[in-house]
Picture (cartoon, rainbow, N blue to C red):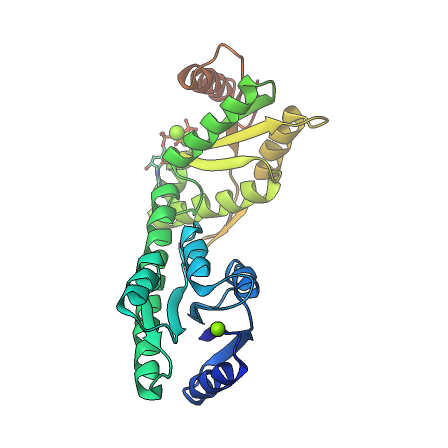
Length: 297
Ligand code: GH3
Ligand code: MG
Ligand code: MG
Ligand code: MG
C-alpha cells in the first residue's frame, strides 16, 4: 500500500517517512497542500494520506474538505497529523472529513496502529466496491453468454431512441436462431448452451464499436445499431446473417452449422419502444415464414 505524506516541514516528513517505510509502506512525499490535492485527484492516487494542517498554498483542513467533495467510490483514508492539539482543532479536522487526527510529536507505535486501522477500513471499502460492481454487472448481463441481458439492451435501446429523436438514425435487428430446438434435441442442452455462447462471440466480433448486442430471450438476440454518417445497416445485417451461416460453432460435439433469421426495423420519430420492437418482430416472423436464414427489412 502506498501512503502520501503532505508536510512542509522537512524534519517531520523525514521522521514520518522513516517510520512508515520501516513498517513496509511505500511512501510518496509532497511539501504543500496544492500538490497533494493534485495527487489525490488522480485515478491511481494513494489509498491513504497523512496530512499536516499548516502548509503553504493549501492547508490540510481545506485539502480534506476538497477531497471529501470528490465523487468517487474509493475515497482515500485521511489522517491529519499536526501540532495543533486543541480540542476545537481536533473536532474541526474530523468534521472537515478526516478519518483520524493525530498530534505532533507522534508516537511511532500509535501511528503504526492507526495506519493499520486505516488499512482495514480501505480493505473493507474495496470489498464493498467490488461487490457493488459485481452486483451491477450481474444485474445487466446474461450469465450464460456475458452479453447484455434483456433489461440492459432495452435500456441501451431507449438511450439510442432518445438520440434518434434528436435526429440520429437508428436500426434494430431481432435475431433468432433457426431450428435451435433441433440442436438441443440432437446434442443435448449443454451443447446448445455452447452454441449460444459461440454465437454471442461471433456476433460481437462482427459488430461495430457503437453497436450494442443483448440476449433478448432464450435463443433470441437484439442488436441496436445506430446508423452513423456513411454507415449502412443493410450491409451490417446481411453480413451478420451470411457470416453466421458460414461459420460453424465449435462445440464438444464438433463444429455445428447454424443459421439466423433477422428482422430489422428502422426508428421512426412517432415510435415508442413497443412499436419499434413490434416491427422488428413482424419482420423476423416473415423471415421465418419465407424459409429462415435471411434478413427482412
Ligand atoms: P425457429 O427456427 O422457428 O426459431 O425454431 P426453434 O427451434 O429455434 O424455436 P423454438 O422456439 O421452437 O425453440 C427454441 C428452443 O431454444 C427451445 C428452448 O429449449 C431452447 N432454449 C432456450 N433457452 C435456452 C438456453 O439457455 N440453453 C439451451 N441449450 N437452449 C435454450
Ligand atoms: Mg506545516
Ligand atoms: Mg425463438
Ligand atoms: Mg429459433
